[in-house]
Length: 79
Image (cartoon, rainbow, N blue to C red):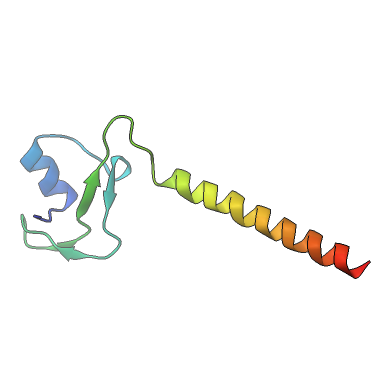
């Protein structure tokens, strides 16, 4: 699969994606369009796609729940 930075992606596909409307790579990679080391477009979002941040929020709530259950069990066992 070809790897393009956001600028090259927009130019090739004639669209105006922003950093908030697509998934960019975490590390710098070589863009096949301009030949520079940049974050490349992993996946463009489409209408109706879930934002990856929602999964982070769910994981945060699960972590908080697990911490509360752990503390509850510890306090209950010490009585």
